[in-house]
Image (cartoon, rainbow, N blue to C red; front, side, top):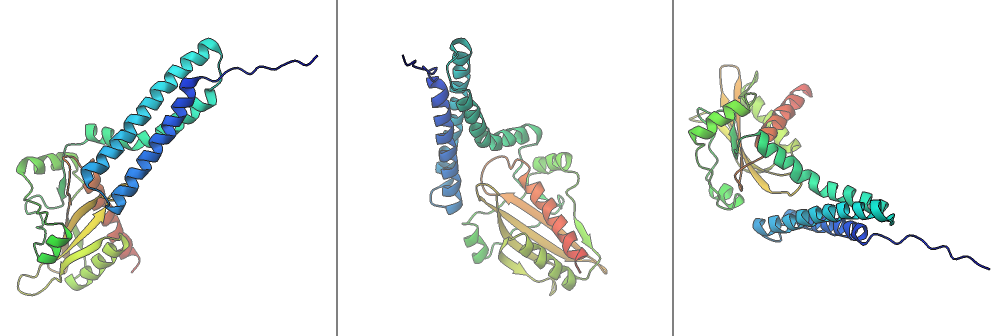
Length: 258
């Protein structure tokens, strides 16, 4: 006489938790691809990504319900819930990081190494076209005070080089950071001040961010000021300050490589 081995049934909540987590991660990846391709507008990209986050949260809720069912009935599905939590965590890690930054840092979108006289973005036709006609206004005094408190280490960079040598170092650093130059003026001439306007992109979504670098010749030295500004939103989550610090580190690396 043959015995039938009956397996414990699966928890439907656990299975749907994993399915939703995978679907949410797919939607999130799709939103990143759309953002980087520029195929749709920013608001649409954020709406798609927000939908992915909501799906991931729903997946976790179903995972919790499935855990209760499994604990009470002994149904199968622990592995599905673990997989769902892992996939949802991959998607939610980035918005969780942004939330922590928003709580910790002030709502700033424009950071400069010179708060008394911030570098001005070029308004040439080429620069405006590259920035999609966006004009960054002077930094409000309240924002300057908030920056002083939040980022005391963001300060001008003094190179012990003449303007021509400093220009070459800055050019190499810009190229190493893979910034796209949209306007530049060599130091010298009547006013002596040079500048480079460039565009960087955020790491994940590829959103454009504007940067201007000012080179001011001094006696045997060159002072470099950097201003980094976000085009959209009310909070940069510390990205502009990080961009300036990374550029300063790249300048040092280029100096060390001479």
